[in-house]
Length: 256
Ligand code: SAH
Image (tube, rainbow, N blue to C red; front, top):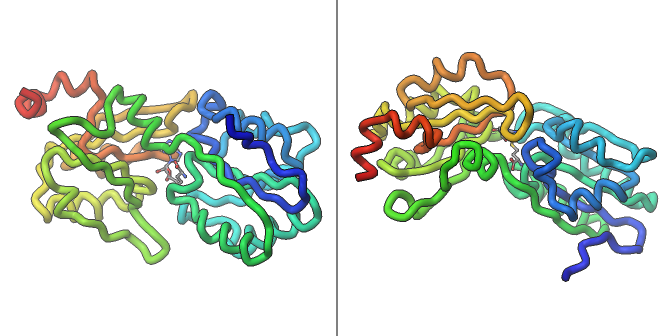
């Protein structure tokens, strides 16, 4: 078995994924890194339940980041990470979900490389995987979609452009991160490219947490259905909760 424990040399950073919220969704490697870290620099979306697994004396610092949302400047996070590592601390940079999905991982790796500090990455369960499990659906399916897209509703430049033609095709499945504020834009672009307004879009809010909520929306009603959503939510284009799917006659036709 590969030993994922940190190196004994000082100045090492572990960049890890905390999963979507429930501590049950941590890998053993991440749980162990949490228990052993001196300093934990974590995103706002990392749940208290997960942070409770840090060592009692550990220094916990919230960086406030939520994807491309507001928070500490990325440069300041990198500076802090490098400073703690240079001081010989065992640093854990903890991001929600998987660190390699909309997590600005590369910027941090570049900063560590530039400073000559060693690092490793521990993956986590991304919101899309946890949401699909909640829906009782597969992310890929023979005869439906041989392709899965993870897309962002907005990026640093504003609403993000995507391959709308591909996304508008029947059977297309995409997990839309940071999509709440971009919903009207997404809906407009998809429909402009021919998407059926009855296309299912499952809204999964606070996935894996006690306050998890699922709304079986359709593309045409997406904006209205998102009105009551205030927590982190992933929009699962092309998927309905398995129970709701049985009630959609047009989907039944497709499945026949
Ligand atoms: N690295 C994270 C994504 C960070 S971007 C991951 O792999 O999951 C932040 C976006 O992720 C949120 O706007 C939301 O779309 C999604 N997200 C993160 N945690 C979530 C949760 N518990 N429930 C639903 N969506 C979540």
